[in-house]
Image (cartoon, rainbow, N blue to C red; front, side, top):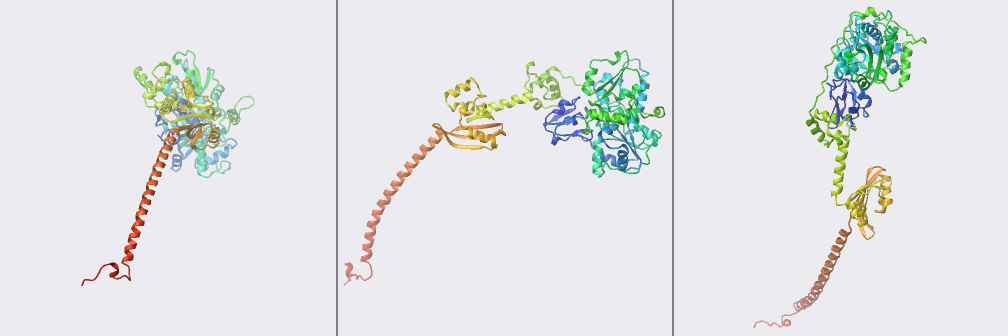
Length: 591
């Protein structure tokens, strides 16, 4: 887990569903021990995995501590807030939002949309110099990362004009004569942009960061706080009253194009949202062969910034877009309010840092691919189902991921299913007891041969004709419907010993597999065992009876001998008893 990267995984909360692998546009996910981890050197921080992860194991780096540290320094810190705030904080007045940010410690607050106005002005100037090829907007950092790394043919087509956020940061620093700037918006990739350009954008926070910060400080966003002095002036007015105008449309798909057309650009312009759409749109195109110039407005998130990974889900896309247009000041005539002296700020705007390095995919030799496929039981082309369950479009792409240690064999659902079936079948075959699995309708799902063999030759013939006897009614073979229903109803295990069925005795154990849906039954024929046990018991009783008789005979004989002995001893005792003289005994004295 790399908590330094803008996006990371809490491994203990990852439930190995591989949904992030399936959805990641650049496959920047490595699965280890069943848990998905971000590969920082491949990740573009688009945040799509944040939106699709069902267990919320994907997280965005928390930079609140770094922001507090900035505010505790000696330099003033200003906030640049993205125009999508009107959707995220719907119903909150602009002046209340700004005064709330001031209470956190910011020296001033301004809208990033003012930087977007300058970007539109500079983009039109850049278009005027084009004689052919494509010009791609640089407003979305995730799209810039994606194109620079994974669509290298279009690296040179990226606009040299920095993003609105970077431009706005420089505007604020120019007006204030220095200081630090923190961007606040809906985008996880902005953190990556800030990491690459720390001299311009000191830090990037998400709207979620901001909400968490307010909660930590016990600040209610709905309250109004006085005191809004000390803001940098960006348009001749204080920042709270400055109208960003057309720049506020940037988070809406096509919004940038609308501002460019207002600046009298006649180039063909197209907007693309979603990285998968972007890749499909540009597939097979060599920009150098485009005779006529064309402009592409590119946003990584489908639906634009209003559908960013760090936006709340409280509003639908249409309502959010309408709110943006309302705040931007779109009149019935279609014109936008607000203005910016672009020429005043154009000079001195620095370009963004160097583009990220191009990604070079590894080309694995065919024998290596075949060996990797064999690890998941795919030895023929027919075995390559290309089901996508592992997260990769094809089995061969999955094999490449195995070779690059980005994937594990257990990610192949079809192989795991076959493997589990083989294990289950082996267990069923080898278990001497009868085993049967039954559904809620009391139909057999699966049984082993031992089970069929317990109930006569006819049932064995059915099993041989239809191994497993799927669909057969269990009660026609084992008439214990009440027990089966009780197990399905209660979910408790039920055991019956020495249960007589016909002329045989059975030991029955019923256990739950899926509550109220599936039960398993283990059947043991204990007839012979009980018969042998009864025979042994009878034999033991016979032996005991004989022993008793012998003991009784011995006792009788001992009794007779004891009676004779008693008579003899009594006679002797009487002869030698008191009151008898020696003459009485028949013995005389010596003379």
